[in-house]
Image 1 (cartoon, helix red, strand yellow):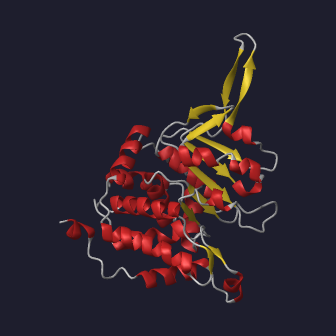
Image 2: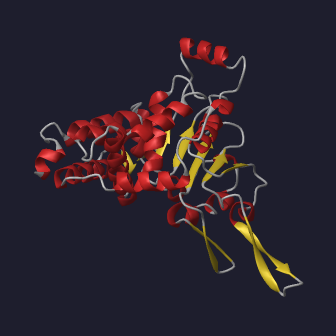
Image 3: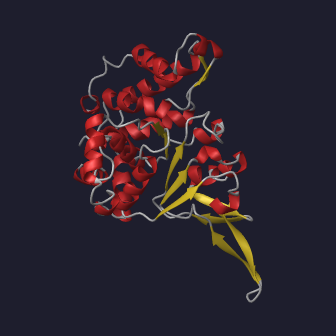
Length: 316
C-alpha cells in the first residue's frame, strides 16, 4: 500500500489532474498486464509511460511505430559472426522492462503482430531460438483514435492482449493552469525519483496475485463476461483471457486499497477499462447510438453484485 502510493505520488509530478488514470495504470502493472492508452496527440500519453519507467527504476525503451518499422526492429535479429563462425542474436527494442510502443496503430499489421508472442509469453523467438525478456516486462502502447491520418485498427488478437485500455482526455482548466505553472522550471520528468526497484516490483506483483478471490466473486466476474457474449447489440463479447484479466486486476485493485480480499466494488471499478476495447458491436448499436460504455453499464446492472457480501466474511 505504501509503495503503491509512493509510485503514484512520483508519477503525479509529471502528470497533473489524472490521478484515476495513474492508479489504473499501476494496477495493471501489478497485475502483470499490458496497457493501451488511446487518445488524441498531446495529452501526455508518452509522458505517463516515461514517468512510470523512472518511478519504478525500470529499463525503458521507446519506439515510434511508423509504417517503415519492421518486425525485426521490435524482436531483434540474427547476424552471422564470421570470426566465430556462428549467428549472434542482436536484441530488438522489446528486450527491456518497460517497452513504450508509441502510436502502435500507425505501423503495419505485420509489425504489430511481432509483439504477440512477447506480450503473451514474455519471450521472443528468432530463427527458432527462444530469448527470455527481462522481468518484470510491461508493454505500454499509445494509439491515436481510428480515423486520424495514417491509422489502422489493431486486430482483435492484438488488442485482446492488452489488459486495460484507458483514455486520458483533456485536463480541466485548473489542472492545465497548474501544469503551466509547474513547467516554468522543469518538465516534470526530471523531478521523478525511483521509489521501487525491479525486484521490489516483482515482489509487489506476487503479493497482489495472492489476494483472496472468493468463489462468489469469481461467479460474478464470469457472469459479466457471459452476459457480454449474449447481448443483443454485441457481435463479439469478452474472451476467457478478458475474464482472467478482470480477476487479476481486481486483485491488484484490492491490494492498492490495503485489502487482501476482493469485493464487488473492485471488479466494478476496473470492469470498463478491461472490457471497453474487447467488445465488438453490431451495426444496430451504431444506429441506436449505443456505445460500448452504455452496454458495459447495462451489464453491471444485469449482473447484480449488491447481494454479495465482502469476500473476507465469506472466506471465514
